[in-house]
Image 1: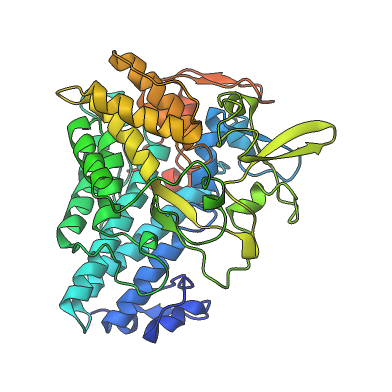
Image 2: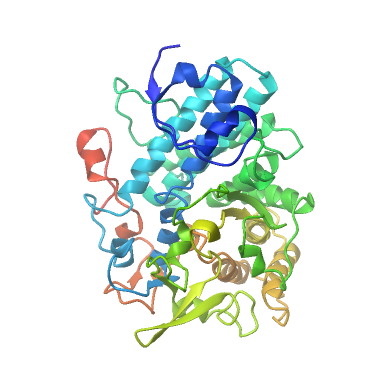
Amino acid sequence: MKKYYILLIVSFLSFSSCEKILDKEPTDKLSLEDLFKDVQGAKTALAGSYKALLEEDHYNKNMMVYPDIFAGNIKFSKNANLRLEDVYEVALDAQESSMNATYSSLYKELNNVNNVIKYTPSSAGSATEKAKIVAEAKAIRALIHFDLVRIFARPFNYTSDASHLGIALILQPQLYSDPAPSRATVAETYHIIIKDLMEAITVFDDTNVGVLTGGSKQNYFTKSSTKALLAKVYLYQNNCNAAFTLADEIIKSNQYTLISNANYITSWVGRVPSSESIFELAVEPSFAGGGLGVYYESSNLSSYRMYAATLDLTGLYSNDDVRGINKMFNREVITGVNYAFTKKYQGGATLATPIKILRLSEMHLIRAEAAVEKTSPDFTTANADLNLIRKRGDAGANTLSLTTKEAVIDAVLLERRKELAFEGNLLFDLMRRKKDIVRVDVTSVVKSLMTNDDRLIMPLPANTVNANKNMKQNPGY
């Protein structure tokens, strides 16, 4: 093995044995030869790949906030030192876009996870553990590619065969001497994402436990959580038969249960996964940073508070809905204006909470949507899933008995917006369903965007395009 060098972020959770290294910040470079000499080193690298997902440029801010602030769930409660202001204002520029850092960070994450996939098989140690490490790494790689294609490319159904530009697929560690990458089609991108997930699923056993020994099972990709991600990917690919089958399997496995209305609010407090959490990014016990919650904490202890809920969102809930303005939001008057801040993220440092990526409630909504889009529409299941999630939020909600596909889709989109608010889904849901963006409670000059507006897709960083003649920029930039 050639002795290349990488810099890994390896602080994650408290693990046993050699994984204790993960409690410390990196102070030097590790050679690939040294890192992957045995399975413990491979575990260290895998932990680093999970940890990188929790960076601000990925799930600890941008990936969770950008789809909601762009599509109308979030407004600013202050007017200085703002984050993602250009997204909110729809003033996007390839040279200075706030999402340029996300593009760069995610490709760095891909390079590290590709090192895990490439070099783990030659490490000394258990073949079973090595296979599981590679499987988890492939699931992480699929998630990163999925995030990139949703941010920087049009939805799968933008063209009839998804032949429009997707993203650069990175499946090997990149060296300076490698040829410059080019963008694959969206169809090719989804093919690779699905291939990685399916290969991971075939390796995982049925214990639903990751290869790393700390934290909770929900902190790692396992057979169940990988199937849940694949169900979501299939939905975005418009393969509704497959999306229905996997969501149905996850729901009927009884590995996860919906939390009750009474416990909904408290399920977002602390660091113990709820019974309906399928995959979430853990916060290590010694975490002392800001985290996503500092942008929402109503007390403003960190002075970062800025993301308030729009009236567009809060007006969707009934007065008795546990997810609504009266229960799931902290209310604050700032310079004479009433603002509402979600309780889904409680704060930073010792109050920082894990970032929930996949929950059982979303599996029900995926199954409901796919039920009426699949080859043999199933309105009974669709209505049952919708009513289950609606009545969990508000026991007094009327019982739906919808009979047309259009009515079900509209109801699912509404319920996804209410249930998954602040979880990074709204913009992508509207784009894949070819819905316009309509914002009312925003100060931005641009309030509405048609579904075919070029600005709905983030620009590729200008530096990337200028340095690589093979990389085509998105239209409008």
